[in-house]
Length: 104
Image (cartoon, rainbow, N blue to C red; front, side, top):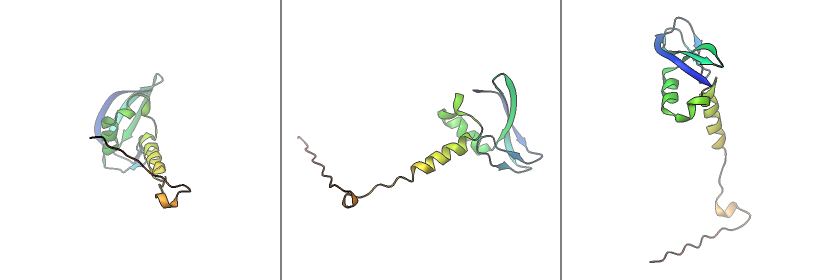
């Protein structure tokens, strides 16, 4: 589990990799610099401002949900679930009928 100790806004002096989405943060861009502890070891990393906002808003990332590439993995999972396609009744090997009775 990553325990965040300190966050601050910085302007990067060189290119960095965002801890959450694994995309590049360009030199001279605003980012969030994070000091944290993981398994009693100090770690530091940078986040895009948008990635930081996503992590703060989404309760899933709190605790053990925050890890290297967490936002990228979450986006990949969402894209994978949209691959499922649903067929209309005519394309199914059986016909579905819905009998809905409403009592008044």
